[in-house]
Image 1 (cartoon, rainbow, N blue to C red):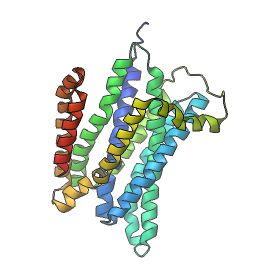
Image 2: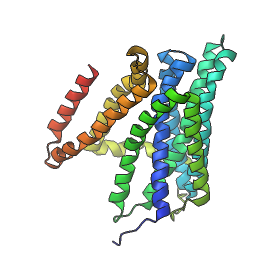
Image 3: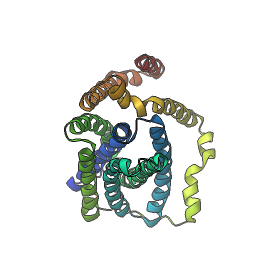
Image 4: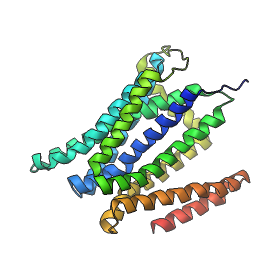
Length: 310
């Protein structure tokens, strides 16, 4: 099969939309939580509600808007308007700090507004990034460029997390949370506008061979997964691991700042530096995987993981 060469414009949007999207997800995963502690209330239950409700909103948006995008056969409007709304609600979340005095005696209402702002932001982020941008990159794939695109997409979350954690801490320490959220939100909005104006649509047929509800629910066909035993075990392992991971990860930056006494910039540098070490550790890990030694590698990784938590 002839290799499909991606143009400069396609590579630009592949990298810019991907990295900017991961930077914005990093804000929600790390800095929204510390913002709540500092500007709203040092109450971990608020973060718990934020994570639970926003995760639900994200999941619904991914399947719902992904199915709708397939149905109309277009990605650009979902990416563009999704990113624009994503950026606007990133800024809006920062503005909730001004509600503390207005809703001083109505704490439950204040918490509800904060959780709602986070969830709406997550819904549009998932619409633009998870559902539509991911589908757009898949539309670009063929057997000739699969490796290149796959490698680029795999780097996006790593790069976004490292840069977002370090840069976010520095900006917050120097200029404050609202300045950081406004800057990042503006960048996301800018990418949304660029997408609406210049992003090329790969040729894609509309998928209207079945009713929309049936098309949407087809993503939840668990019988197919259960028939593939190894895939089911992989999903189950990932689910158990990530449930445990989210028990502590959503609170770890607040632990650095409010228990250990680190500043925001130092907390960001520590986490970003640790992620960089983790990336470098994948090089020898790949060597063991290629030699079919995945099992001892996984056991060693879990051992280091548990020791780090202790």
